[in-house]
Amino acid sequence: MESYWPTIVKNPTGNKPMDEFAVLIDNISKIVFSRTLKNVDPIIIGWRNTELKNEVIKEEVLELKQQAGTNILAGSPSLIVALTQLELIDEYQLSVQPTILGTGLPLFKNITDSVNLKLLKTKTFGCGAVTLYYEPTNKGVHS
Image 1: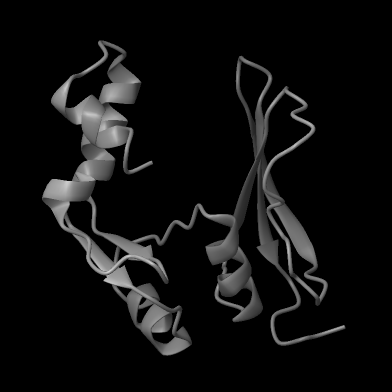
Image 2: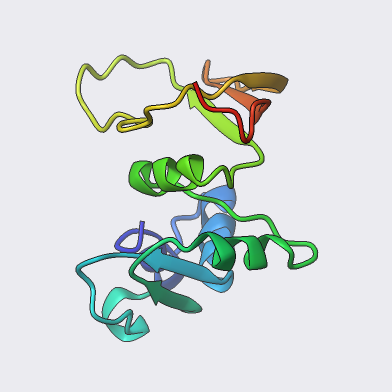
């Protein structure tokens, strides 16, 4: 993401939703979780408002969740797994695309306890994609 969206901010595509998203994601506060990066110099990686963390600490995430009017979005499979294992996810938004890839990163790799989900709503897109909104129903319960 960090190699793509900042380039759209600098050179808009003409696709209004895409260009608006690029500006939005450039302006929001971001936390990059990495065990290999030493810093997140915005000149090098192209992302403004970015902070580097090398581990997910439950208390720090809980503090972020308490900030009024903000949602925390996690996109990397390893971060989703870490937040799931710490029972910090309030809602899963899973998008099903009308394409079978056959390879790729598994989203829930290394999840050892089952997580029961309750369907909240669905959203269907003209391209055939569907986003499913779920909340976990068994926080604090392990199988």
